[in-house]
Image (tube, rainbow, N blue to C red; front, top):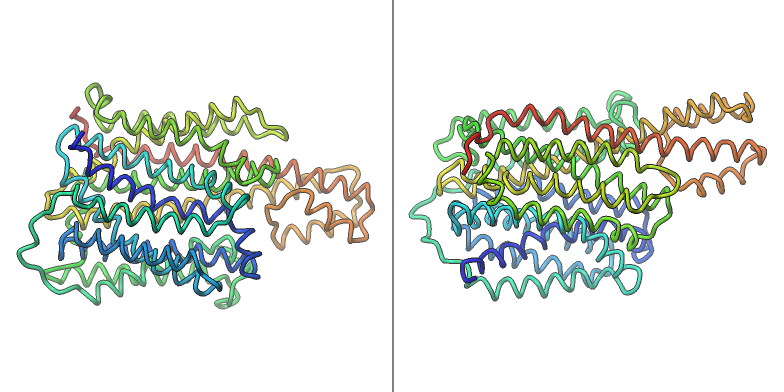
Length: 519
């Protein structure tokens, strides 16, 4: 049992890192009320948290190599705890943004790369595979348990208790740090590459910001951007500018003796495949976890707590499957296990298509979610170990930064891409339904068409019905429009799940260089 003490500490840290983001997502309505603000302001706070983490993850990994992973991990936990404490007592929105988005985001950027390297440094062989399976499973569990815990606390007590509890958990982790062996301090290190940090932060920050805001700004045609560029949405321009910064970053790094990122690492085939698969895994998982709550809450009217309960099967099966890493490694190679996981993911996405109905079949939905957890767990049981085992001890913090950068980019793009597909499919299906409905007059049909072209939002059908009551649309036609919108919501959700299944199939192309031999 003593050999797993380090994993207990690192597992708690991993669970903590992913918990509060999912909690915040289900607490939006209460945050709007508490801070007397709008939904867009809270969404901006959530966006900023992801942005800070993604932008500084590579830098956090480098700092671990420079000053020692354990030391940087401890500093990151302290920073994270300070941010959690400030968030718990935040009196205004800007204090919430400072405590959660900025301070906690910077703390996470220090903790996560060091965590990945500490797992690799604490275990060998099958124990390492088990440890990475547990870490991956706890990450998925945090994403799924967050809505349940956050929904219950927000509904019956207050969301602030989540962050107060995080402070307590941080203190527990710091007290138990003696369970993690003290590694020798680096013998020497060069100064931090400030230019590289600025270019990487700017490049990753702009790309992630643009992707996260694409549903609000629009990709090309402006929807609701803060400004336009030559009459177009700033989204693609921000992506392009971020791309230019990243190209300059690469050029700068290739000329340095002690770079922030050694691009030669990408020439290691298992590492490259592992990073691409981590990107794909988070893209699929976060895309699905964006769509599923919309179905449960917006269409079916479930509360945040009820939604969390229906996500529990994912947590249970993902944790169980991810801990099976050493067992399955005796019979199959990492490449085979990951490919089986992708097949299971594709099957679960297709199964979810069949569960999208006006009334939820609880058993079928629970089984589909359990299958989803198995697929994600099989991937989690292999990928962390593949990535860290593809390099030597001296490169592990740096690779940890790349690992979590890939995951953050996947999460950001998954939410934006699946969200954009959902809204596009909703608009197309709604427009077609209105155009073909026999009870809707030509005049109302034209007015609806204009509104649909301007952009539609995914809102409860009752909200649309209430809005139509305040217009001159006859009640019979208003009912027909609401019915058309409700049917279009289901069509849009089905297309989103089909898109997730399609992305899963595309991810097979990234598995070619994963290890093909059993452990």
